[in-house]
Amino acid sequence: MTDLSQIVKAYDVRGTVPDQWDERVAEALGAAFAQVLNASDEPGDAVLIGHDMRATGPGLAAAFAAGVRAEGRAVVELGLASTDMLYYASGSLGLPGAMFTASHNPAQYNGIKLCRSGARPIGQDSGLAEIRGRAQALLDSGGSRPAGEPAAPVHRRDLLADYAAYLRKLVDLSRIRPLKVVVDAGNGMGGYTVPTVLGDAALPALPLEIVPLYFELDGTFPNHEANPLDPRNLVDLQRAVLEHGAEIGLAFDGDADRCFVVDERGEPVSPSAITALVAARELAKHPGSTVIHNLITSSAVPEIIRENGGEPVVARVGHSFIKAEMARTNAIFGGEHSAHYYFRDFWFADTGMLAAMHTLAALGEQSLPLSVLAGEYERYVASGEINSTVDDQAAKVAEVRAAYPEAEADELDGLTLRFPDGAWFNLRASNTEPLLRLNVEAPTRERMTSLRDEVLDRVRR
Image (cartoon, rainbow, N blue to C red):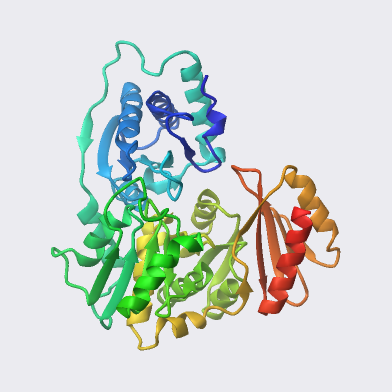
């Protein structure tokens, strides 16, 4: 018997195929999604469905569509899509959607990211738990499709060109200086979207020379995993930037909703620096606006937001929390340490491509190399995220908390301890694995290293 609690996570559906889920499960989830939409009077009478380049995507998407149609809702098939293309479709067409992707996970995984119309997020507290319950009931009863009920129709739409044109309107790259840009798509959906967004002959030519790495769509990831958060997966991009004398390197994850940046020296630019850079650009257009950042971004981020006349608001880690807080505050922009970037002009949804375009614009509008430009936004030394396997996560977090009575504590998301010298660390449990995730930041490398090693010793002993 399938236990959906194993694959329905805090923000999405994610698991290995076929042992954890298959097309039968996808059909039940599609029917349950449509039932929840029907019960909430969701606008429109159709559901958008897209999938990434994974081999299991088309079959799972088709089964999900069958479940949706059995509940009386039509389906709009987008075919191949990046996750932010699905969000564009949901926002521009005013329809709910389902994106079949496992993002940066290995080849045997697949998953579903769901949204309501206008790209509004669906998480455990905003409909996903109900979808899981309804789908579980359908599976336990032995089926998902009502016998004899006619299926709603299927329509097909290709929105790649419309998506590209929309992004081009948000960031003007036509007047920047010529830039050589290495892009590592990791055999993921960036290989599908980048050529159209940055090089489509139907759109005005841009002063960009794109050097492509691994643009061939291949869900087996033959070159490296499409997870740029892991430094091992940036090595090819770093080497290519140096070999080609490029001004910048961009790396997208599997579904291309995240973008990582490498400077002209082949050195990674932290997502916090990109968050601060884009925030400054957006605040220049919309003075006084709110900008959201999660609590693991650098302390430099709220500092720079304030210096540029904005109002920083901290939120929990995770797209459903960020998007909800953005909608509540009408924030102009939001950024996370994991390189998710959210824009009010993009229905408060995340798009790695738009963040990449802002970075290209900032670099190309002046003459400084990216290392110097990004250095203006990097003020502290960070450890990056370090994972430790821990059986009793709550007990270990409590033990660490007790070891630092002098620190100021914050429990918005896990445990954050801040020290008088400006150093801080966050220790939080994974939503899906028996892991504790540690992030440390300090004014100097020596202080960061010392605090990091001290906390890790307590976590792992």
